[in-house]
Image (cartoon, rainbow, N blue to C red; front, side, top):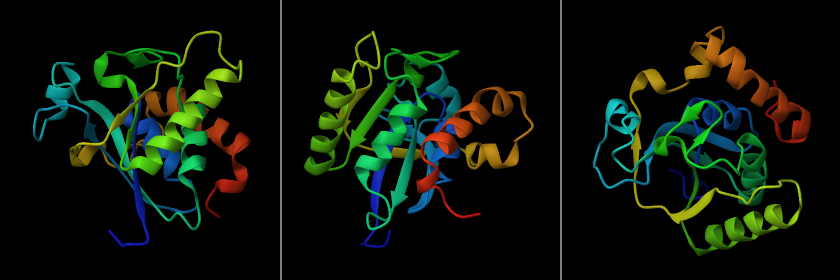
Length: 181
């Protein structure tokens, strides 16, 4: 990783959705799907899917803070998932789909806590914000077939029914943050 780049690690349900969103943003250098938050080393998709490893499906984002701020990354994250749903997102249910912001340093922790508090106080949601904020400990890259899943499977039913609406919402709400095509 280039020293001028930073990392953000986020879990917001299925990693295919979150990966597709962040790949569209200006200032994002890379997005890798994987597993974070558990104790088991080098877990497989099958192990994480069982819900018994403590890991969540997550993405690790490498970004240029001169082009996109951590605050912007979180603002987009709050719209990319339902922050009030516990242990899942939509029909993806289980502890492996819970929403978590994994902070890498004290500055990220402070920004994440302020961002969550502001969202909770906004009145946008009737239910409390369930997304957790936890220290980053480890990240394990998911199997190759999970990387760039949306790009390789745009016509798959999951992509059309779940990811496309999230991308439309991103484009409508954060058009100024998108990479030029």
